[in-house]
Length: 308
Image (cartoon, rainbow, N blue to C red):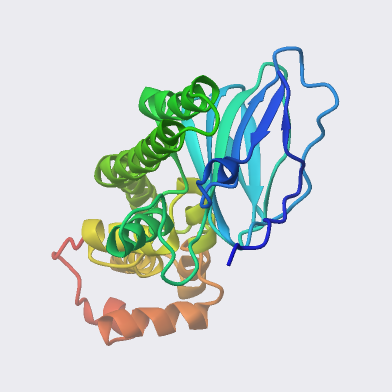
């Protein structure tokens, strides 16, 4: 049974400024949208999209020219040339601006129904492909020439192959497969190198200023990675999740202040970002098994020079 048509927040079209193509007409049911926005003349007539989501699709976009801003679930993502942005199913999002000179490629991959293959792959390979796309640690990352050329190859195949021929469908599937694999592989290559360096910079900032406000949501938005990948990177680098690591840095700083014996408990608590002296005392006792006053009065830390 043929699946129902995908509900889109726009219309299919094929103009010099905007191409919105339906590859399902070429037998590729899992790619209902292949798009290119090329605003050579300024893109007049295009307005910022309203917030929307695609319940069945992963949307993958590549920016070749122009500096854009994606909004998703209350966060903003700077989408610059060479970058890939991935929107997962059921994630509200919108592109806020259409700047003059914008050149952007985009594609929807429709998630398969039960037992339905993707690009005619066997079931296990289809499942791996979908799982890999859904579990990519970064939703915004640098794709570079490899992703640009992969998108261009799909369009070149679409435009260059004769209609209603076996080789057209085959070559479109091969080009689309290459694009999806390129996105997965580039994201995986960056997983260890790029995300680790970004998390390392945050770790250094926390060590230098543990009192600074911080939340998992703010780090996810800043580093453009999933919460689970963020937490795993922190554990790998520090042995602790982000908030626990920040608290350990605060406790270490509190020990140094207590050794000096100059500031009061309330001043130390406020300086280190605790909500109250009582909260500070509670967190300190959890971490050290003694109260701040006992630590200071008993001189337990003198000469130890403990650091995180």
